[in-house]
Amino acid sequence: MSFKRISRRKFISGAAGIGMSLPILGKASISKTQGGKLNRPLIITSKTNPATREGVTTAAWEILQAGGSPLDAAEKGTNVSELDPRDTSVGYGGDPNEEGFHQLDASVMSGPDNNNAGAVSALENIKTPCSVARLVMERTDHLMLTGKGALKFAKMHGFKEEDLLTEAARKHWVDWKETLSERDYYHPPHKKFQPEGGGTFNVLVLDANGDIAGVTSTIGHHFKIVGRVGDSPIIGAGLYVDNAIGAAGATGHGAESIKVCASFLAVDKMREGMSPQDACRYVCQRVSDRHNGKPMFGLKMVALNKNGEYGSCSLRGKIEAETGKLVGSGFGVRDAKGFRMETGLALLPPMTKEERAQIPWR
Ligand code: GLY
Image (cartoon, rainbow, N blue to C red; front, side):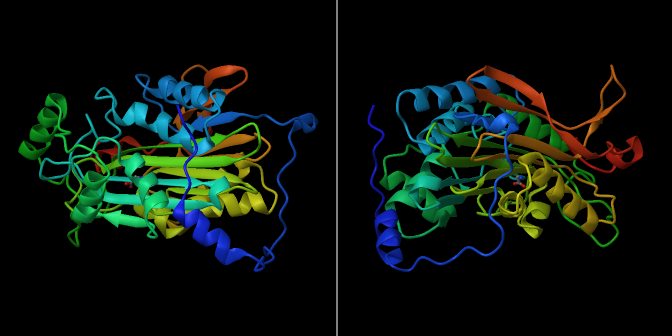
């Protein structure tokens, strides 16, 4: 397996940067690990689906062990879920848009490649959108390709067009179509609550040298309006990596993540010295504040820093049955101790039954 790829953009951006080093504003200090130990390599994922959450991190871990780059690891780990029809959070096997076909979003960022990035949005008929996003980064001077152009580009690079609608997803879509009523994403003036429902995940990778990469991949929202693009392919919203600091990814209600540049904000807070956990919490607080402390949707942040600290916070949590405590969503962690699911923080309690009844696909 060869992992070395030379990026034209890396060459261009590197050459343009010679002699032009600018100071970074603000205090750049990464929170200290307990006992000063570095926890590297480290992989975290927001994925909770039991069918693939361990497979995603194991594949990524094995790539790192074989000498692959953090981006190789994040991409191949993400592919595990993208290709598995049991995992309904991403393309193949995921719910389609309102007209019954898939338009996928994905982004990649690679710290050692000068924090370079690539993305695709509304990409149809391709099972591994994050791999196309990587090629946008490596083989073009653009950052994002969308729709028909993204598909043309993917086919040019040998990706096969395939039908992504499984029988289970088709039936789910037909059920939705036949029972629509208020459960759509249109917003007439009388509609008070924002709908929510999506399937997204982030894979953040820190290698043994301290290099960092990240990938976010998604179907977007279940049965979304054709042409809708969420936060996943928006660099700074659904994903952000700074090789000197850390990485963050967002899942949940993408429009709200975009409004606060959620992943950039988390990394920037880590730059100021916050731990990944506190940075995730800070972003959730900012989102909540925009909605007077009553956000009617979900958002979850995951983050890691260069030392190998990590954390997660959900805007809305759940009450743990055994302890009665408010807890956030699970997230997957893979490090030298192996794979495990950990529980993140939660900013706010779950929505009430009445509130939930207003929101489809929860
Ligand atoms: N966070 C996924 C989306 O809104 O598309």
